[in-house]
Image (cartoon, rainbow, N blue to C red; front, top):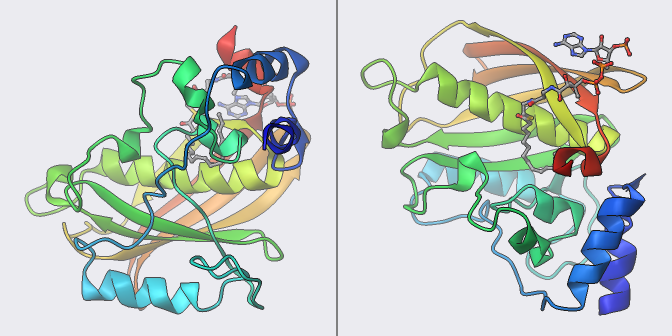
Length: 236
Ligand SMILES: CCCCCCCC/C=C\CCCCCCCC(=O)SCCNC(=O)CCNC(=O)[C@H](O)C(C)(C)COP(=O)(O)OP(=O)(O)OC[C@H]1O[C@@H](n2cnc3c(N)ncnc32)[C@H](O)[C@@H]1OP(=O)(O)O
């Protein structure tokens, strides 16, 4: 088990991570028991029938069965969603306990199901695209009955950042440009579509569109620039 973890943390989605952070992570393995982690993007009772219907639609087209882990044929991969982004670098290992133990990923920081960010993302490696089903909860109000623009920006940052991470390795947002075209009703279900525009050296440019589930209505459009970094640079 430990050998598997040591191999796993040597890479971040195929990208080498720095030897300093690697040494620190390897040292931590001697004192930490990996535990199984919760994937917060699994269906829960707060999901509306529409959210569940679209989840089932994409899940049926995945390359892996999410319950049995058996291989299937399909263009999509359902991405896990942990409550610390560092857990992704380690394949879900609880190394995040070492760094700001009380920190939580912003979108996964409220425990009440359905109150804030309910979402699940799917990645299509071949086409370099990601879609996210997002059901914004009642605590995300901005304009009366509608979603706060900052919450929409958060989700765009999160999903485009996830796509950048899977395509280019650890990256941070350098520029986020948003046009809000139409207000998003609280409790509705929207689809966040993200696509790779281009990669230039350390820069990954992603385009993003938030639409109704039938794609007839465009709520938001964005372009985002991510710059890849060495994970160790975040820790000084
Ligand atoms: C940790 C990653 C985890 C990924 C996980 C993926 C798996 C999924 C997991 C979990 C899902 C959750 C995902 C959440 C995602 C959230 C992401 C955020 O919100 S990050 C927080 C907000 N962002 C910052 O705090 C950055 C602050 N800025 C910086 O640190 C630096 O400015 C940085 C790294 C962006 C650039 O600094 P330099 O010194 O390393 O590099 P220089 O030379 O300045 O820039 C490199 C190139 O980029 C251009 N550039 C930089 N900033 C630019 C800008 N604002 N506009 C245009 N170009 C810019 C430059 O002109 C340069 O281009 P030329 O190579 O010369 O062509």
